[in-house]
Length: 78
Image (cartoon, rainbow, N blue to C red):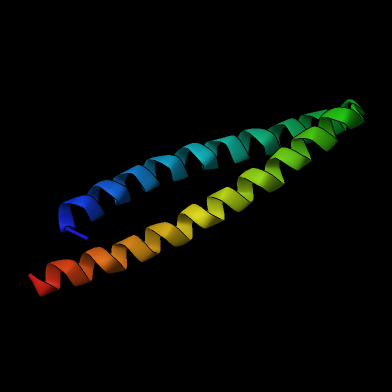
């Protein structure tokens, strides 16, 4: 891959990571708020959403690390 393409992919992944991290924080805050007022269905839905978004966030983090390594190697080779 070209270094320009790697850089663009890295920036897109960073943006998606930040967005998914914010969604995770929101899901966690919904869980905390719903537990206080005993709304079990909100806790269940937010917990499911939190687990899914956390998995996506973890996958994006791994992708960012791999893209950074690839970009570093591509810049070193050129």
